[in-house]
Image (cartoon, rainbow, N blue to C red; front, side, top):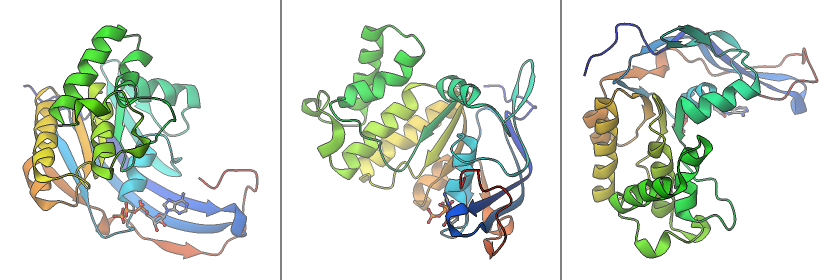
Length: 250
Ligand SMILES: Nc1ncnc2c1ncn2[C@@H]1O[C@H](COP(=O)(O)OP(=O)(O)OP(=O)(O)O)[C@@H](O)[C@H]1O
């Protein structure tokens, strides 16, 4: 595989401050002056102590948290796209087509079966339902989820079973950029190995991955580079007057 010289993702002097409007505009600065670049086919792993801002960075990249300072860009063949200030419909398209995300916890929707949860990202792009179901089942089988569970809503599944549904949903879309927030946290050794193989295959196909892995064995197998946030993040709390009471706390 050829690695492009142009980064697919770049961040320059990125910053994040939460403003707690319910608490008199209390400002919590969790990130300052973070720069990074990520190329297709590369896996960059975020490290740093608990609460330093690793998940916050992934949530900024997925449009869940607003970017408060600095620049964050995706680079496409026809030029860069600035993510700061993107309207919500543009985020919708990016999440559907470009940025995949495996969060720590599955968002369970009542009466939606495990295989429907997994195939949904393909259906959202207009894929054929039979083909999407087949791919969902193949991924669930590969992740050793018992077949009797495929047609059941995952609300009552164990933590590890829910995590595997989440992983299958994250990988099925084959997004060019994949964000992984501790995808192996609740898994046994055999299923951790399946996830490692899925990540290595995604890299070989040119997927750029940004991940958090507390399991050092997994981290060592998948990471091309580590980025320690300890040097870039400054969790501090400043009592301040709320400059814009109408804004969301994010
Ligand atoms: N929505 C929010 N509002 C206010 N503060 C928040 C919000 N989300 C995160 N934080 C704060 O930002 C800091 C970073 O949290 P984050 O979850 O990113 O840390 P982390 O490095 O992923 O931690 P861990 O390794 O424990 O999962 C924490 O102090 C957290 O309390």
